[in-house]
Each structure stands twice: as C-alpha cells, then as structure tokens.
Length: 388
Ligand SMILES: *Cc1c(COP(=O)(O)O)cnc(C)c1O
Image (cartoon, rainbow, N blue to C red; front, top):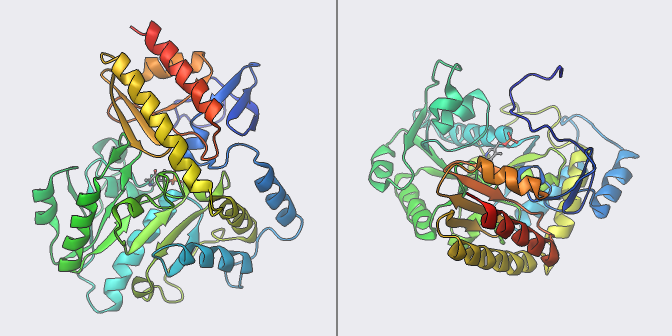
C-alpha cells in the first residue's frame, strides 16, 4: 500500500526514464508521451542541453535567499521583459503561486494609488487558476471548492461567452479581470481574438487591469511565445509557470512597470522562488525557445498536426466532435466520455490526458519530430477504427 495520500486518481503505471518524446515504463513498454507532465516539459524528457545546464549550476550554487541579489534571476527576468509586454518580474515555484501573486499585484496596485476599495477579481465560472484557497475561489468551481469553505470574498464570475454578464460584472470595485486566453483544464477552449481585444478595451475604459493566465498556454505552446500575442493585445499582468522550467518547478508573474509600483519591499516573497538552480534552468529553456526557427517550427508542425487530426475527424464524425486549440495545445473533443478512448490510446502506447467537456488533451513537447506526430496520428486512427 502506498503511503501517499489519495488525492490523485493515479494510473498503475510508472516510468524508469524518459528521452525526448518518449517514456520508458517499468512494465517494459515504451510510450509516446503527449502529456509531457501537462505541458511542462517543453523540450521533452532529459533534454541534453537542459541536463548540461542543471548539472553545471548544481556544482556552483543551488540556493541563496532573496535578500541577496541573484544574477541568474536578473538575467531571466531581463530576457522575459525584453521579449514581451512586461517590464517587471517576480519569481515563484508553481502556477498557483503565480496566479495568486498576480491577484496580489492587482489589489496592491489600487491600494498603492489610494483606491483600496477597487479590490475585486472577475473570472470565468469554472475556470482553472490553481488549487490554493484563493485560486479555487477564483475558479468559482463548486467541485474544487467543496469542503474548503467558507467562500472567500472578492471574486466574481461570468460564464464563458456571456458578454452581457461580463460587462455588467465589471464595476467600480473590480480591480482586475483574470482569464486564460486558451482554457486548458476547461477543455482547450480558445477565447477568440476579437473577444480578447474587446475585453482589453472594456478594461481600459473602466480602468480595470487585465490578467491573462498563461500558465498552460504560454512559453511557445500556442506557436507564439504568449497565446495573447495572436490577438495583439497588451495585458497588465501575466502569470506563467509550466513550460518555463522545462520540468523544473518555476512560476513567475510578469507585469508592467505601472502595476509593479505597488510591490514595495515586504509586500510579497517566496523562500524558494527564483533560486539560482531554477533560474539557470529557466535561462536554458529560453536559450532554446528564443532560437530563430524554434517557434516557426512549432507553428509549422502544429498546423500539420491539426489538419491531419481534422481529416481523422471527418473520417469518424460519430466519434470526434471537434479538434480544438492552437499550436501544440490540442484538444480532441469526443461526443461521449473520453476515458475509454484515452485508455485505448494508452494500450497502443500513446499517452494523452483528459480535460473538461469530453476533451482529450494532446500536449507534445514543443520540439517534437514530424515522425512522432505521424506515429500519434496512426495510433489515434487505429483506436478510432476499433472504437465503439
Ligand atoms: C496548471 C495551471 C495552474 C496551476 O499551476 P500549478 O503549478 O499546478 O499550481 C494555473 N493556471 C493554469 C491556467 C494552469 O493550467
């Protein structure tokens, strides 16, 4: 019996090692891993460049307190700001910490300009921003909040696509609207570009901050560094995590200089966040993703993947309802519950993971090879052919 708590519904499968897009299981089988730790291993398993970077730093310095300067973190922050809307960064260790810090930044900004009553956060009902007490309240999901009451104050919600309610819910008291440009856990639901642009306009008019949660869809996953770049909008605050560490736990909140002005000494902190070991890995991940051809390649290969998946959808219109997503954040929506299909893919050595709305999430590493995509397509088609 495992001494681990039962808060996960784990599959009876474990792995000995990974290499690129593949995982080698203790049962002797080799799996094509299109989960990659849920969009975390952006450069695949045991990437030689990352292995070298972490080994090198591990021999020099792992951890020092944030009460000292950390040059590796200053470098990573500088690189993140040079390439994006952001002018300032706070490092964390995970996605939930990053979204939670984003909420703090928004509230603190209005406090710092003497508008402390502008402190409410507006989110999409049943969205996902993490599992801390604040972030489950942000999600507004009854299921995630069950048993974790009382409900905490300061969060409002509107349903995905309900623009009337969204406009109504932004009041004088709203500090920020927080949404994911592409809802990951929510079923790979893409917020259309025109909606994001409209939302930016509404936020400008009402002096509300726009937080775009890029924890899952960011760091190249969509074919652009940030998913919101597709819509050409400029957010105020952006939490990131998953992909930036390539498998090492890193989170961060990126923001404009204006909103960062509220985060004076003592307002926020993290013991581990931004330590030299993590920052060296983050820099190594960016070395790869910032390469000239890297995102072009993600765009090209993901376009191919989407179009081939759509062909399979056409061929099996009674099984697959929709191919969703952008880049390598892909959702196959089935008409029925997706568990059996995911199991069959696994029986055929392809690992995928569920999302809401009967969606199978397909998350290859960003440096996946075409022949690995072809292998996945072959397996998906095979499962469709025998699926009842
Ligand atoms: C995964 C995720 C989080 C939470 O990240 P953790 O590292 O699990 O805390 C927050 N927001 C989004 C959009 C996510 O996908």
